[in-house]
Image 1 (cartoon, rainbow, N blue to C red):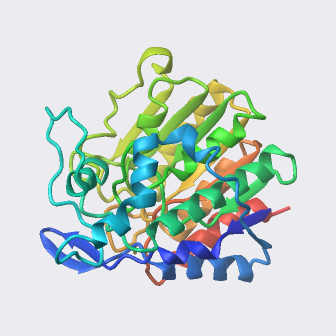
Image 2: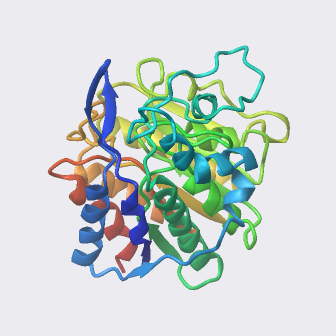
Length: 341
């Protein structure tokens, strides 16, 4: 197994987060990356610096308007009177908005879809490096260098839409990795086991059947992202039936989770994919700060074992999972299954 990382990811170092209307310290911080790298060191998994593939795969996923915005917004924002150090949207367009704004404040509200994506001076460098990390892991698998790879991606990506960021995510790393895999594999599946529904990933592949999207997540009726992730959402056009959501109840523990995972894996097997991307959120942990689901470290080990048993070329993309005493243990439990003989 090979792992990939790029040090520029640490340039994205947000400070702001909002919980129930009160500002608190950000949860998606560079320290997460250090914890994940320490796990790799402990497991003797070689860590390779991500290569730079340019915009080739990123631009297949995200719109030109959005990419231009991400690359150029911070200097423009800094010129505003009394500009904050981090960019937070003042407003977001409602359901009936139809016009793309010319002013920078309006563009922030258009592209940054909630308040959990504070955008700082180093954000573009960080998110670009995160996407290159995912691409490097996918390239290693697609080129036959490795059967299993792990991408130490932060910030995560599965909430990022084609034209907007949300939920700590700016560029959709799993989708970018999928575009690289599709150059060598006909059918790819993305299995998302993050606590939260991968709404951005779902949106990107909504009308496509070359990438099947499967997500197991806390029921959005009571959990972020609230508006997406329901069971009836199946895709559209050519993509109808190639999106599958498994919303689960608050407090779900290992036994119940594995029953749902088996249903998901049955759907995946019926699709007969050539490769799989595991969007690995560790925030379903019983000790994660979000405290919604109740997976143990043993449960994460079971997820790793069952996914490995698909015997497919596999790219593991780090999504959520926030600082707790067992965050590293949970990652190790998954990765150990992929390095076991």
